Length: 165
Image 1 (cartoon, one colour):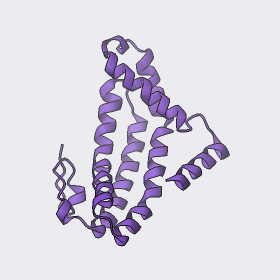
Image 2 (cartoon, rainbow, N blue to C red):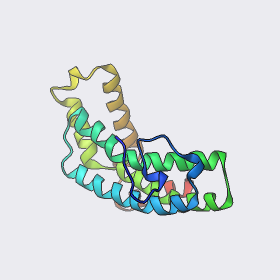
Image 3 (cartoon, rainbow, N blue to C red):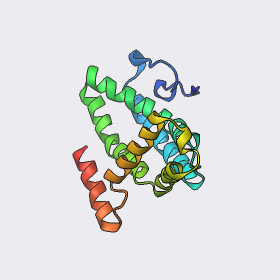
């Protein structure tokens, strides 16, 4: 799936080969706030109706995350190969928001519940070993990401995650 972007920002053209030579810090400054807002909004909608099926969880999550993964992945690559003070500054300004979004996803009770329902549901045996392993790994990642923490413990955990980023 690709996105056509009327603004011409190459970071918003997910699903296409990255146009590295065209991308600069201004593109990151423009794209990331919109992508973060879009992803948060779509995540809230996803959580409200997540279906405990392979496509209902993994495929919908892939589609939801694809635009921001594309933009952030391209930005991370550029930082590694074409580092500059301006790019590093822009990258570092968005990194806490990316960590926060990742924590939000990893601590999503509706997604966790859907994964557990998939694991204990009638379709489990038809998934195959690889997909079953992916479900197990996702549940483990969510547990390790502080899913069970509440209140001040979760707030502190998330603050530490941001600090370590």
